Amino acid sequence: MRFSAEGWNRKLHYYLGLYFLLFLWLFSLTGLLLNHPRWALAQTSFQRIERRYETPIDVPRGETDLARARDVMRQLNLEGEIDWPASGQKPGRFEFNVSRPQDASTIDVDLTRTLAMVRHFDNHPWATFRIFHTFSGSRYNAPAATRDWALTTMWTLSMDALAAGLVVMVLGSYYMWYRLKPKRRLGAAVLIAGFLACGLFLAALM
Amino acid sequence: MTRVESMRSKGFYTWTRDLHLYLGLFISPFILLFAASVFFLNHAKVAADVATSEETVQNVEIPDVGDGPQSMERVAAAKKLLDRLHVTGEIGFVQYQRKERRLVIPVSKPGLETRITVDLDARSASISRRTTGFWEALAYLHKMPGPHNAGIRGNWIGTRAWQWFADGTIYLMLFITVSGLYLWFSLRAERRIGVMLLAAGAVSFIGALGAILR
Image (cartoon, rainbow over all chains, first blue to last red; front, top):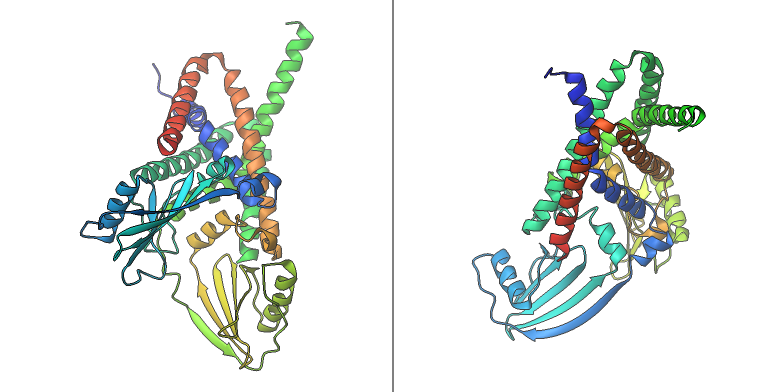
């Protein structure tokens, strides 16, 4: 069998595209929802059902805040990505948030009374769908926010893989186009137009 | 298939292939921008509270920006202040802090974050600026306009223009995926392995979503 870089590049383009098809559709459609928060569908996605409850718990155990939060979550039967209050912990209290695409909880533990006060929010299915676009457990402008749930890490790796796959597909497409001699001139004009539109726009904004 | 049908089918295939190629080439810089910024969004950390420059402007004529929910009227009033301070960009929100008698207006654009804090009694405005690097600027564009404060989003022409580009990229990307499916399906030799990869992708996708939503 003869190895052909051109043939393999073309196959890689199809194969990556087919493998990532559903991921691409998810990020494209959720991108539209995020870009258009005034759309009726996007507005619907902001509706969520709130439930409040209080429950006695054992004193949270653990060496670190993360371990203590996980102990509280185990007792409350909650799962998800942990987020800490920006203002730090108040004396006698232990506060944190837990979120997943489908729901979120705000937890405030009164350490003196060993009582957990929970506000639980069930997200609308469209919100769940939308949140997958941004569910990375990390915010670049909040260095304290780190991923601490294995499934967030798994989803983040999926996003990275899709991004890497797209870069490979785009670069591979340049090679495929360049090998098509009759399409070179018009292709070059279109490609330059794309880079100019993107570059000049960036330059103007910055 | 008759000869005419065959020719029509070939014509459709050729048109689809050419559109897939040229539209793909045109949006490729935007796809690279969105894809590359994913790594920054997922893994980078920046100290967003460290200003690169600060200045205070005295005797500022302060417009009445009102109080209450965020609205375009309040943003329009705040823009008058921005013009006087020579600040441009998307206004994040307009916050009146009653107790401190202060106005806080964060303003952002790719490469620059500005925070204006107005002391209403002293009639002074302190302007804190943080210049961001190239990657953070790309990440900013990736997130814009975003879902927050929908009622006032797009209050800067740059954001509105970017929304067109971002939408265009998405619509063209959807066209490219659908046309790509058709082009692949037309290649009989690639059908079997293609179906396997499509199925593998679907299993990964449903598996990942299912694990999180279980």
